[in-house]
Image (cartoon, rainbow, N blue to C red; front, side):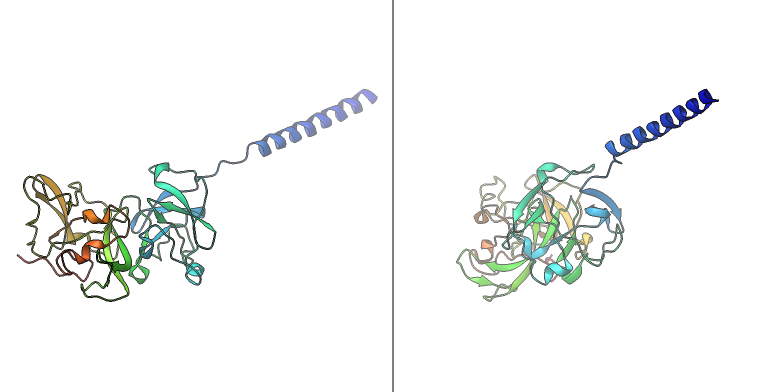
Length: 281
Protein backbone atom coordinates (compact mmCIF):
# COMPACT_ATOMS: atom_id res chain seq x y z
CA UNK A 1 0.00 0.00 0.00
CA UNK A 2 2.80 2.38 0.95
CA UNK A 3 4.54 1.52 -2.31
CA UNK A 4 1.39 2.36 -4.32
CA UNK A 5 1.02 5.72 -2.58
CA UNK A 6 4.69 6.48 -3.20
CA UNK A 7 4.40 5.66 -6.91
CA UNK A 8 1.29 7.83 -7.25
CA UNK A 9 3.01 10.80 -5.62
CA UNK A 10 6.06 10.28 -7.83
CA UNK A 11 3.91 10.26 -10.97
CA UNK A 12 2.08 13.42 -9.85
CA UNK A 13 5.36 15.23 -9.15
CA UNK A 14 6.77 14.20 -12.53
CA UNK A 15 3.64 15.45 -14.31
CA UNK A 16 3.71 18.81 -12.54
CA UNK A 17 7.41 19.19 -13.34
CA UNK A 18 6.78 18.44 -17.02
CA UNK A 19 3.98 21.01 -17.18
CA UNK A 20 6.24 23.59 -15.54
CA UNK A 21 9.04 22.89 -18.00
CA UNK A 22 6.68 23.16 -20.96
CA UNK A 23 5.41 26.47 -19.60
CA UNK A 24 8.95 27.80 -19.33
CA UNK A 25 9.70 26.68 -22.85
CA UNK A 26 6.67 28.56 -24.17
CA UNK A 27 7.68 31.76 -22.34
CA UNK A 28 11.21 31.52 -23.70
CA UNK A 29 9.88 31.40 -27.25
CA UNK A 30 7.07 33.95 -27.58
CA UNK A 31 4.92 33.99 -30.71
CA UNK A 32 6.62 35.63 -33.66
CA UNK A 33 5.23 39.09 -34.52
CA UNK A 34 5.05 40.70 -37.94
CA UNK A 35 7.43 43.37 -39.28
CA UNK A 36 7.23 46.95 -38.03
CA UNK A 37 6.64 48.19 -41.57
CA UNK A 38 4.92 46.20 -44.29
CA UNK A 39 2.94 46.51 -47.50
CA UNK A 40 -0.79 45.82 -47.39
CA UNK A 41 -3.44 45.64 -50.10
CA UNK A 42 -6.07 48.37 -49.70
CA UNK A 43 -8.85 49.90 -51.78
CA UNK A 44 -6.25 52.24 -53.33
CA UNK A 45 -3.53 49.66 -53.92
CA UNK A 46 -0.46 48.57 -51.98
CA UNK A 47 0.20 50.90 -49.05
CA UNK A 48 2.86 50.96 -46.34
CA UNK A 49 1.52 50.10 -42.90
CA UNK A 50 2.79 50.41 -39.35
CA UNK A 51 1.54 49.14 -35.99
CA UNK A 52 -1.59 47.04 -36.19
CA UNK A 53 -1.60 47.24 -39.98
CA UNK A 54 -2.57 50.93 -39.91
CA UNK A 55 -1.92 52.87 -43.12
CA UNK A 56 0.85 55.46 -43.30
CA UNK A 57 0.81 58.81 -45.11
CA UNK A 58 2.94 61.55 -46.70
CA UNK A 59 2.22 65.29 -46.29
CA UNK A 60 2.75 67.57 -49.33
CA UNK A 61 4.23 70.51 -47.33
CA UNK A 62 7.00 68.15 -46.13
CA UNK A 63 8.55 68.12 -49.62
CA UNK A 64 11.86 69.54 -48.38
CA UNK A 65 12.20 66.64 -45.95
CA UNK A 66 11.22 68.69 -42.92
CA UNK A 67 8.23 67.65 -40.82
CA UNK A 68 5.83 70.59 -41.04
CA UNK A 69 2.78 68.96 -39.42
CA UNK A 70 2.88 70.21 -35.83
CA UNK A 71 0.63 71.38 -32.99
CA UNK A 72 -3.04 70.65 -33.69
CA UNK A 73 -2.09 68.93 -36.93
CA UNK A 74 -0.47 66.11 -34.97
CA UNK A 75 -3.72 65.43 -33.14
CA UNK A 76 -5.15 64.20 -36.42
CA UNK A 77 -1.92 62.92 -37.94
CA UNK A 78 0.26 61.17 -35.33
CA UNK A 79 3.86 60.65 -36.36
CA UNK A 80 5.37 57.24 -37.09
CA UNK A 81 8.71 56.53 -35.45
CA UNK A 82 10.80 53.42 -35.11
CA UNK A 83 14.57 53.80 -34.95
CA UNK A 84 15.41 50.57 -36.79
CA UNK A 85 12.15 49.10 -38.09
CA UNK A 86 11.92 45.54 -39.29
CA UNK A 87 10.68 45.47 -42.86
CA UNK A 88 8.27 43.31 -44.77
CA UNK A 89 8.72 41.98 -48.29
CA UNK A 90 9.13 44.67 -50.95
CA UNK A 91 10.62 47.34 -48.67
CA UNK A 92 14.32 48.35 -48.62
CA UNK A 93 16.18 49.57 -45.54
CA UNK A 94 18.07 52.19 -47.59
CA UNK A 95 14.79 54.05 -48.23
CA UNK A 96 14.20 54.70 -44.51
CA UNK A 97 15.85 57.18 -42.18
CA UNK A 98 15.20 59.12 -38.97
CA UNK A 99 14.90 62.89 -38.60
CA UNK A 100 14.71 65.04 -35.49
CA UNK A 101 11.76 67.41 -35.61
CA UNK A 102 11.91 71.02 -34.42
CA UNK A 103 10.17 69.96 -31.19
CA UNK A 104 13.00 67.50 -30.51
CA UNK A 105 11.01 64.33 -31.22
CA UNK A 106 12.07 61.83 -33.85
CA UNK A 107 10.20 60.65 -36.93
CA UNK A 108 10.80 57.95 -39.52
CA UNK A 109 11.05 59.00 -43.17
CA UNK A 110 10.71 57.13 -46.47
CA UNK A 111 12.76 58.52 -49.35
CA UNK A 112 12.95 61.70 -47.28
CA UNK A 113 9.18 62.00 -46.71
CA UNK A 114 8.16 61.92 -43.00
CA UNK A 115 5.58 59.23 -42.18
CA UNK A 116 2.28 59.75 -40.34
CA UNK A 117 -0.84 57.84 -39.30
CA UNK A 118 -4.39 59.22 -39.64
CA UNK A 119 -6.45 59.14 -36.45
CA UNK A 120 -9.71 58.27 -38.25
CA UNK A 121 -8.26 55.06 -39.64
CA UNK A 122 -9.77 52.67 -37.12
CA UNK A 123 -9.14 49.35 -38.80
CA UNK A 124 -6.14 47.84 -40.54
CA UNK A 125 -6.30 48.72 -44.23
CA UNK A 126 -8.38 51.89 -43.77
CA UNK A 127 -7.21 54.73 -46.05
CA UNK A 128 -9.56 57.51 -44.97
CA UNK A 129 -6.71 60.02 -44.88
CA UNK A 130 -5.92 59.73 -48.57
CA UNK A 131 -6.57 62.99 -50.48
CA UNK A 132 -7.56 64.94 -47.32
CA UNK A 133 -7.15 68.64 -48.11
CA UNK A 134 -5.57 67.68 -51.41
CA UNK A 135 -2.23 67.43 -49.60
CA UNK A 136 -2.24 64.03 -47.86
CA UNK A 137 -1.20 60.90 -49.75
CA UNK A 138 -1.19 57.29 -48.66
CA UNK A 139 2.41 56.10 -48.40
CA UNK A 140 3.11 53.99 -51.48
CA UNK A 141 6.66 52.87 -52.22
CA UNK A 142 6.62 53.42 -55.98
CA UNK A 143 5.16 56.83 -56.78
CA UNK A 144 6.25 58.26 -60.13
CA UNK A 145 5.29 61.78 -59.03
CA UNK A 146 4.32 63.37 -55.72
CA UNK A 147 2.32 66.40 -54.61
CA UNK A 148 4.19 69.27 -52.95
CA UNK A 149 2.82 72.39 -51.27
CA UNK A 150 5.28 75.18 -50.63
CA UNK A 151 6.08 78.84 -51.16
CA UNK A 152 7.59 79.18 -54.63
CA UNK A 153 10.90 81.05 -54.50
CA UNK A 154 12.64 81.94 -57.76
CA UNK A 155 16.35 82.17 -58.46
CA UNK A 156 15.94 85.93 -58.05
CA UNK A 157 15.01 85.38 -54.39
CA UNK A 158 11.46 86.63 -54.91
CA UNK A 159 8.31 84.82 -53.80
CA UNK A 160 5.87 83.64 -56.44
CA UNK A 161 2.44 82.04 -56.60
CA UNK A 162 1.32 79.31 -58.96
CA UNK A 163 -0.06 81.84 -61.47
CA UNK A 164 3.58 83.02 -61.98
CA UNK A 165 2.94 86.33 -60.23
CA UNK A 166 4.90 87.70 -57.30
CA UNK A 167 3.18 86.89 -54.03
CA UNK A 168 3.25 84.86 -50.85
CA UNK A 169 1.41 81.67 -50.02
CA UNK A 170 1.89 77.98 -50.55
CA UNK A 171 1.38 76.65 -54.07
CA UNK A 172 0.67 73.03 -54.94
CA UNK A 173 3.01 71.57 -57.57
CA UNK A 174 4.38 68.25 -58.80
CA UNK A 175 7.70 66.71 -57.87
CA UNK A 176 9.32 63.36 -58.51
CA UNK A 177 9.34 60.64 -55.84
CA UNK A 178 12.18 62.29 -53.91
CA UNK A 179 10.81 65.83 -53.96
CA UNK A 180 12.57 67.39 -56.96
CA UNK A 181 10.39 70.03 -58.65
CA UNK A 182 8.96 69.37 -62.12
CA UNK A 183 8.50 72.13 -64.70
CA UNK A 184 6.84 72.68 -68.07
CA UNK A 185 8.26 74.81 -70.90
CA UNK A 186 5.68 77.36 -72.10
CA UNK A 187 6.63 77.18 -75.82
CA UNK A 188 6.21 73.37 -75.93
CA UNK A 189 3.29 71.77 -77.77
CA UNK A 190 1.13 68.80 -76.85
CA UNK A 191 3.48 65.83 -76.36
CA UNK A 192 6.26 67.69 -78.17
CA UNK A 193 9.54 68.76 -76.59
CA UNK A 194 10.68 71.92 -78.39
CA UNK A 195 13.48 72.76 -75.96
CA UNK A 196 16.04 69.95 -75.86
CA UNK A 197 18.66 69.99 -78.61
CA UNK A 198 19.46 66.76 -80.42
CA UNK A 199 23.04 66.87 -79.14
CA UNK A 200 21.71 67.30 -75.55
CA UNK A 201 23.98 70.33 -75.10
CA UNK A 202 21.26 72.22 -73.19
CA UNK A 203 19.94 69.22 -71.26
CA UNK A 204 22.03 69.99 -68.14
CA UNK A 205 20.27 73.37 -67.86
CA UNK A 206 16.76 71.90 -68.05
CA UNK A 207 17.15 68.11 -67.79
CA UNK A 208 14.42 65.92 -69.24
CA UNK A 209 12.39 64.05 -66.61
CA UNK A 210 13.22 60.53 -67.71
CA UNK A 211 11.01 57.63 -66.75
CA UNK A 212 10.25 54.07 -67.70
CA UNK A 213 7.63 53.35 -70.33
CA UNK A 214 5.35 52.03 -67.59
CA UNK A 215 4.21 54.80 -65.23
CA UNK A 216 4.12 53.83 -61.55
CA UNK A 217 1.74 54.98 -58.83
CA UNK A 218 0.22 58.47 -58.99
CA UNK A 219 -1.31 60.30 -55.96
CA UNK A 220 -5.08 59.85 -55.83
CA UNK A 221 -5.71 63.60 -56.11
CA UNK A 222 -4.33 63.40 -59.65
CA UNK A 223 -5.70 61.59 -62.70
CA UNK A 224 -3.30 58.93 -63.89
CA UNK A 225 -4.71 59.35 -67.40
CA UNK A 226 -3.15 62.84 -67.49
CA UNK A 227 0.31 61.25 -67.48
CA UNK A 228 2.03 59.68 -70.45
CA UNK A 229 5.47 59.35 -72.00
CA UNK A 230 7.03 60.52 -75.24
CA UNK A 231 10.32 59.82 -76.92
CA UNK A 232 12.41 62.99 -77.09
CA UNK A 233 15.98 62.99 -78.46
CA UNK A 234 16.23 59.30 -77.74
CA UNK A 235 14.97 59.56 -74.15
CA UNK A 236 11.66 58.52 -72.58
CA UNK A 237 10.22 61.74 -71.16
CA UNK A 238 7.32 62.00 -68.71
CA UNK A 239 4.43 64.27 -69.70
CA UNK A 240 1.52 65.77 -67.78
CA UNK A 241 -1.58 66.97 -69.64
CA UNK A 242 0.57 66.84 -72.75
CA UNK A 243 3.32 69.01 -71.25
CA UNK A 244 6.79 67.42 -71.45
CA UNK A 245 8.32 67.66 -67.96
CA UNK A 246 11.75 68.94 -66.95
CA UNK A 247 13.94 69.57 -63.94
CA UNK A 248 15.90 72.80 -63.49
CA UNK A 249 19.64 72.32 -63.21
CA UNK A 250 19.85 75.37 -60.97
CA UNK A 251 17.77 73.59 -58.33
CA UNK A 252 20.84 71.38 -57.75
CA UNK A 253 18.54 68.34 -57.43
CA UNK A 254 17.46 69.57 -53.99
CA UNK A 255 14.05 68.72 -52.56
CA UNK A 256 11.36 71.39 -52.83
CA UNK A 257 13.59 74.01 -54.47
CA UNK A 258 11.76 76.05 -57.13
CA UNK A 259 14.35 78.47 -58.51
CA UNK A 260 13.30 77.77 -62.09
CA UNK A 261 10.01 79.67 -61.79
CA UNK A 262 11.75 83.00 -62.44
CA UNK A 263 14.11 81.87 -65.22
CA UNK A 264 14.60 83.72 -67.51
CA UNK A 265 11.41 85.44 -66.38
CA UNK A 266 8.22 84.27 -64.63
CA UNK A 267 5.90 82.21 -66.83
CA UNK A 268 8.48 80.64 -69.15
CA UNK A 269 9.09 77.60 -66.95
CA UNK A 270 6.01 77.19 -64.73
CA UNK A 271 5.46 74.41 -62.22
CA UNK A 272 2.44 72.19 -62.92
CA UNK A 273 -0.57 70.97 -60.93
CA UNK A 274 -4.23 70.03 -61.42
CA UNK A 275 -5.12 73.56 -62.53
CA UNK A 276 -2.60 73.54 -65.38
CA UNK A 277 -4.23 73.75 -68.79
CA UNK A 278 -3.80 71.01 -71.37
CA UNK A 279 -0.81 71.72 -73.59
CA UNK A 280 -1.71 73.31 -76.93
CA UNK A 281 -1.47 71.42 -80.21
